[in-house]
Amino acid sequence: MSEAYLDDELLIRRAQGGDRSAFDALISKHSARAYQYAFRLTRNPEEASDVVAEGFVRVFNALHNFKGQSAFTTWLYRIMTNCFLDIRKKEKNRSALSIESALVTNEGDVELQVEDTGASPHELTEKGERERRFEKAVARLPEYQRAMIMMYHAEMMSYEEIAAALDLPIGTVKSRLNRARLTLREMLQKDEELFRI
Image (cartoon, rainbow, N blue to C red; front, side):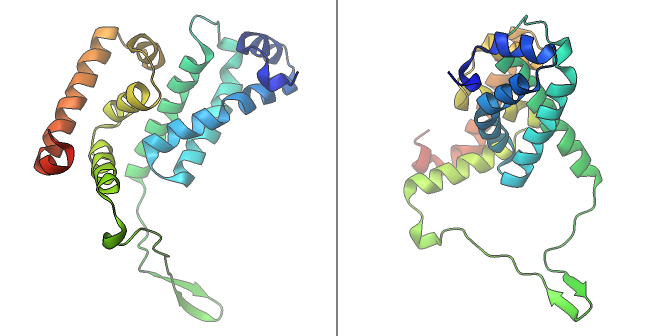
């Protein structure tokens, strides 16, 4: 049997004992789900990869502190959420480069070109439009609310798991999730015909 299918608890114990292959198996076992979660938070493949990479570095550095009081995945979601929030804080402090600017080379200036891979308005279906508007509304939520919406609705985590992942009381998770849903409802009310609110 492959190490990737071994129980998390066994892999963690072995990794804490210095077994690098056990840690690699732990990463292999959880990397796809971690990326899916990060992508749902960021909506950007490169940023999602950065979140996952930084998250697993933090897991490696802190694994000796993991006591097993919660599921490994709960701990992993907490770390991924913190990485996402930290990256967002750094982005807010970073100046943006315009995609309209030119790249200066030895041969002269080269205009930056970005390929538009989006569907044309004629190709959008009602379902695609609904998803786009919903994702846009979710992206406008505060980061913590967005993370909770993704954990609960996309990752199917329980209130208890979310509370453990974010180190919050269950009542706080429920109230913040409810506020996030109400905010989404208000944002999407203008699209009543699409969402049938």
